[in-house]
Image 1 (cartoon, rainbow, N blue to C red):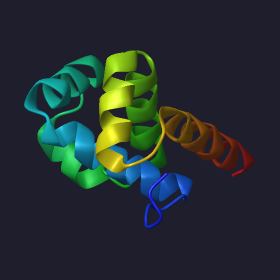
Image 2 (cartoon, helix red, strand yellow):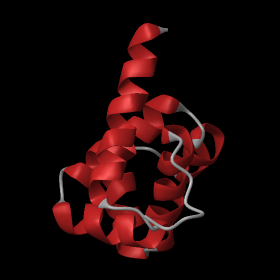
Image 3 (cartoon, rainbow, N blue to C red):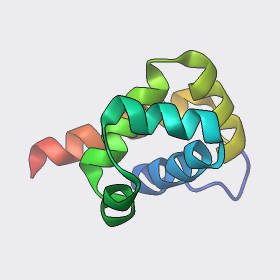
Amino acid sequence: MMPDTPTDAHTLALMALAATLADERRAQRFLDLTGIGTEQLRQTADDTALLLALMGFLEAHEPDLVAVSDMVGVQPDALVAARRTLESSREKQ
């Protein structure tokens, strides 16, 4: 892990979202699979449900998970752990 890389699950998920959207093909697949529109994405980008959907999307296709983790500067298992943390904190609410 890079020394300046955040380890907070929410921050990692937001970084993964930005990295996903930076790749046009990956972004389009995410939008197509989730059915979310670009305007709705803008309005809910910080929403835990959206971030969990993104993390699930990445985990479902290892090449995406690896590519995004490289872009964010963490190991793939850090993104998986971030999803678990977000799920756990959401269940406690």
